[in-house]
Length: 503
Image (cartoon, rainbow, N blue to C red; front, side):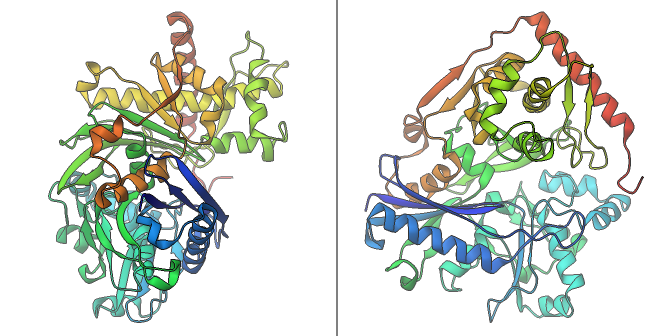
């Protein structure tokens, strides 16, 4: 039994990857599922779509690999974090569609919590800021807007789970209601210092304790899949939220190691070891992973627009047909122009956290064309990463002495132009690994660690293989000039602060 099945349940698709004992990939399958946008700023998924697409890709990957349930030592789950499902304990029926992490409908609840002076206490206990992004206020919204839901929850009839928890419950035939510490740490309800659900937080946000799952290590025996799903029962022994799973897949086990994942948005995590670091720069303090009852913490910064800036060039402006054209196009840009795109299409994430501002282009001339816009779009991702990098180094003084290398993964890392520019602006090496499926690999590793397929973390780290190291090659003067231009552009956008209701 040297295979491990990783479920990577994402925002727009469900994926399954079968890893061998040497962490090479035996097979993979992917299926997209519908997105629902019932109102401006609202994003929902049908839980049944999440479930059926997950089962389908697992079956497809197992069939492609030419193996059976008996050959699979364990299943690991990684998931879109913060997305919230509430379902009936007896029937398994969701009482409402899943409210997705991107959804902003609880902005008023968050504003009231802030106005009531709750943010210092909540931040101190959870490491998070008050924002609609997190699960807690989404649960409260469902309880208050689905007729009878709050009364049913009070009677113990309803269960809450992030997507990992919901999948685990379905995979085990309703036998196991559990999650891991990384997903729990994204709810606004979990005390990251005690490692427990927090009664004071539950009362403030209005969530009954009976709804909550048991919180376990990221690598633990969660349960077994029902035999009818995959032709035999399979142990489920690894769970982590997607960004934490990518951190594990990148083998960032030592304090000071940092990874950045470039998808639709960008998420950077810096391992800070066994001590949770309080951010003074609006970064999040989160659980990186929990093994053998011990929590390892990270600072996290999220950028809302990374790959979606390239999608905008393609779908919004029509200046490219394929994402791969962007790097060569940027390479043709006029070096005398300094065009900056601040891609605040949905506000700005860390370290600014301003949902009200909107994007802007600076430095346009009569000669600005597609090449300069492509250059500005790719560079905007590098500048935003620099802002996170600088904030992390300011928050965690130990990073000054750590030899920091950024490990990268995600679709945008295929662009050599972007990765080189990233190394230039950070003035630090950027490492792209051989295995790009780092999120799924992290989930597989956690499952395989418990099942005895994979070795302990330091030995697993030895398996990490470098595909390409991008070394900084930009002069200090150019770098400083470009970063100063970016800082001015961001300042201009933040000064505008146009509310969404303005016309």
